[in-house]
Length: 500
Image 1: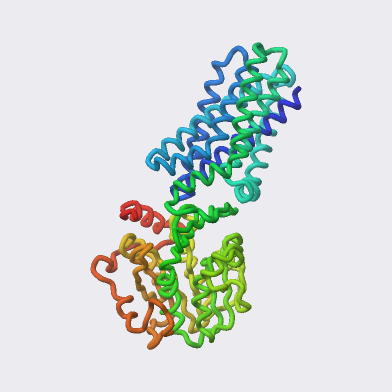
Image 2: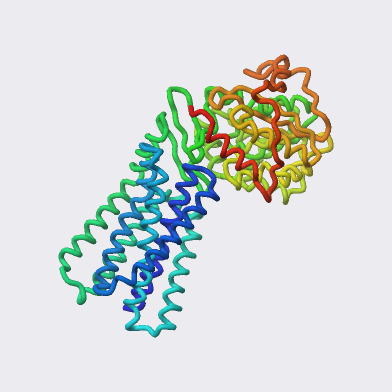
């Protein structure tokens, strides 16, 4: 019996950590700023576990029965937690945070009750020293196992909702196992067996229907039909369709609309690349959808393009799915294109190659892992990878809705001794959007652009580099790895921005 209970400690430790990780991941997906969300979730969860451990002192009789009951309640709460959070966010976004933190507190408190009760059940069979050592060892091993499995297996293969149901089912099976182990000490076995059967049935049903629940939540979260959805190691990838308009969302954030993405990508690429007609080697950082690569390939003098994107699932679907491959005109399967799936920051540190033209098409700096790609450290790396006359361009969020954030990017680029040429364009799906051309020497606009472009023209360029009063430069601090001030600017400004 001792080893059976110790095995149960391993399972319940794994389950408890999974619920904590799911809550943190869901909060990061839906609210952004992963460091803040994980910090709050972990802090509240540990606090609640402490409260639960303290409350266990009042459980003085029927310990085995209480253990079974607590396992069944955790199984239900934890198992349905992810589905509940996504459905609440879809139907009542304002209630999401109370629901999130309420679930975290309740599950944490119940998990805090588990281990003290298990230790009491084992006390008759193990001495105090062995009891503490073995229980804590199995507890930590369970946490280690799930902390490795969560990003590598659970999220990309199962997703958050299915993972929650699976581990809820494991909690319920632990309750059933304990019910059998302590059958001689427990009364009302028929009623308790029925309880276990009902909980296991509910969770098994949830596991079977998890795809439907995920689709139900996403159908309500997105106004258009969801035509593709997939969870990778790094993010939730969703593609929606309304008539002939395809939209890509990463972790709930719109990346492009096929109706007007050409405005964004033409503005991103051509003002810079047309000014370097001698450029033969191009590098795209981010931009795994292949749209920026598509625009670069319109310049015949470019002999090779290296695309570095963190998520292999994004580059895979945009190279293989017909509806997405059509958007980038098959750019990702061009013989000129080489795809690397890696962290752009680390990859730039390690590579020794140089490029004539670089596009930094990263998501907005909504969290610290993205904010590092807009720091002085990153722009110093970028400069080292440019050829003598090389030029780079970075997307820099909206100079209208996130004015201080935009000029923070400009200030940061200039602080490392580079020349920054900021400009903007109107993209209906996003509003007024900003870009910055980065070079060692002052930027000189091209005299002509490809006449086949749909949006950008040589005649239009001067207006793109002129900023009206409501987007004019404002003072901003330099964004460094040590302060990540840009993330704070961005979060504050977009909270005040008008919704769609």
